[in-house]
Length: 387
Image 1 (spheres, one colour):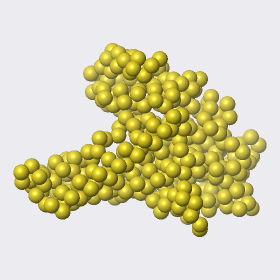
Image 2 (cartoon, rainbow, N blue to C red):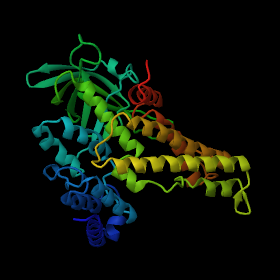
Image 3 (tube, rainbow, N blue to C red):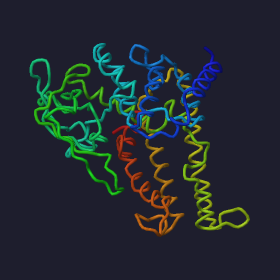
Image 4 (cartoon, rainbow, N blue to C red):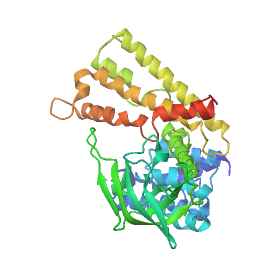
């Protein structure tokens, strides 16, 4: 099927199935659940996956076409919690999992029915992740886990967690690590949300007390390689390198329309922002944003297979994080005192939202690996610089 034909098929299907009732439905409602079921039946929640695991066998360009048609129609395409399953552990299982593991875990992700979270960082092992100490001891046909993870995003809503554990305490720190899968709904797993300054709690502490791990991914003590590959999938998603990023890519205009905000809060003369210094900063930000999006578009065009890139993902993740933070910082500066509101009638919902978004966006240069880690990877693995 040609891309033109595929796009028309998608539009025709959406015209019949994406009704006003679906468009106006809320997450968790029966109408929204039925909508996700229809998408899953088409294989359109994970269209780039093989049909045998719930996908549609789409190639990269077909996947981009689908995402772009969804975006153009304003479609609610995916369950809000599907990201880690679709973009992180799913691709990792496709690459390293056994046929049995793929058959048991991938269909639930592809149907938007199972939520996953990540068990990597520990209180004493953040940027130096390889120093992790959560242990996993083989007991018959399963592993028994003991230890603690932290910053486990959305663990309080997840069904499963993929965990990096130490299976050989005598080996060098990078060589004694394995990746296992753990059902969160068991007595040995305790989840405690962490309250952030932004007012929300996407992060959690996760405790394992004789918890049972049902699956080992890959070979024992080879988890460091697998864990790094999963992070490349994560960074690719954060940076917008995949099909979803192609559909959502802005045309150079920041999400918060900084120029319009500046005219509203700072003032304008003759259609131009009154503050010349601020005007220059906004123009420079737009240039940087357009440069990033153009480079991402070129990278997607060159990546014919759509397979997640390797160490180059760190470049886009670091640059994208800086751009994202710069955007919200500019926004609150433009809004002045009105950009620092937390609550109260003197602030509009937009102003309160700007404050909370600015605070939450501070974490983007930490999530998925700190910018400092990304710069080290770029220096060593991309540029080949000496230690």
